[in-house]
Amino acid sequence: MRNNDGLTLIELIVTLTIMSLLLAIAVPRVDLNFGYMEKMINEFAMDVRNVQMENMKIPSAGYEIKIYSNKYYVRKNMNIEKTVNFKDGYTIYYNNGDSISFTYDGEPKKAGTFTITDTRTSKIKQVSIVPVTGRTIILE
Image (cartoon, rainbow, N blue to C red; front, side, top):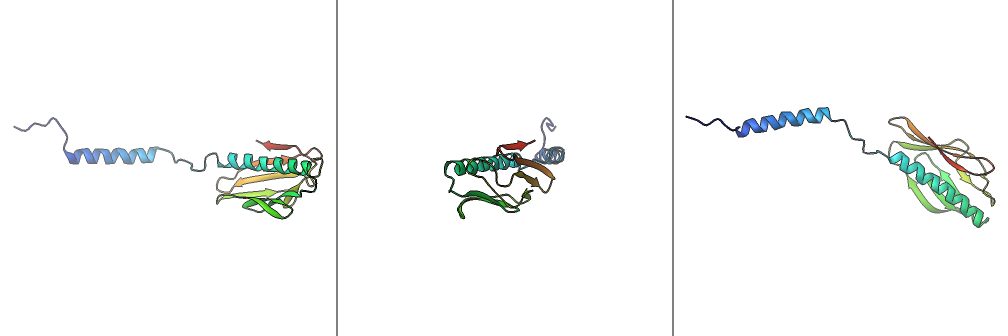
């Protein structure tokens, strides 16, 4: 007489395969870029504030941020101090030209709003620079 208390190896493999397939279908996809826009908008706002402070400390420093569609540069008198490249699928846009700089008293030369967009999901984050005061605000 045979003892049928356990499972055969084939039964175990088939059961685990079916459970794996069901689990793979049921679990939602993980977004590998989770938090990326938040990180980039915070870094950009810090760079804008830093450019403002440097121009206030040394009026002839000539700091500015130059904007391109997928990156930006922090420049000092046309010399690139920092380059920030966005991942594929992310863009940056400025509604008042392609660069931002400040006067010696912290006033923006061209105030406006920067928009970072995730082109896959159409989600946006914005940084606004207030005229006269140069206050930098992250818009939610």
